[in-house]
Image (cartoon, rainbow, N blue to C red):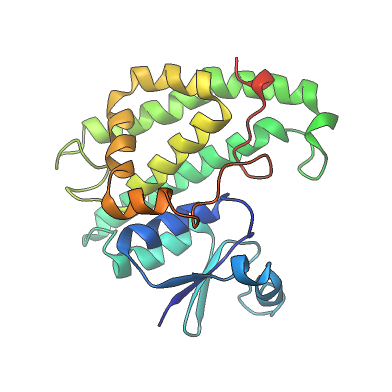
Length: 235
């Protein structure tokens, strides 16, 4: 039985963290909204009890789970992308939730005042928000990930344990998104976080991920997603 992924059909956004896990595991899944334009997704969001607040959400048989961290905590063991021990799984979830904070902060650089207003209507505020994000928050988040990699008792290749987990895939996606949105600032930080830079390359060359990145299934970054490139915000 195939997993059914529901997310906006034209952006990577938060749905990409789930896609990467499914792709890395070679899971059988359907990216539903890319086939129907989001019709089924909107219907499921209105179904009442336990309806997802917002996409992405993942469905398997009669169970549907929303929120990226919750989805990955649920599906990670099924896909072989989560360690066995409870303490390691808790640490893995903590990492994922921290990356969720980063994604929210990245979004708020271009929508710092009103998420429903256009970027052009909040440019001064965005410039101020982006300066703090690129100068302090990107180094802080990626520096934290660097410490996690370099102090992992199982080795420096992965964030948790001695094999790939969904946290590594999410760190890859975070770095890809930041490199698109803030190429100058991110390049500076990656020079100071070589383990993070190495993990990015390691994930990109995994056979299934490499094939996915070259396929039409990988939606290109664009100005409608969470990570958006406005040159004036990349000091």
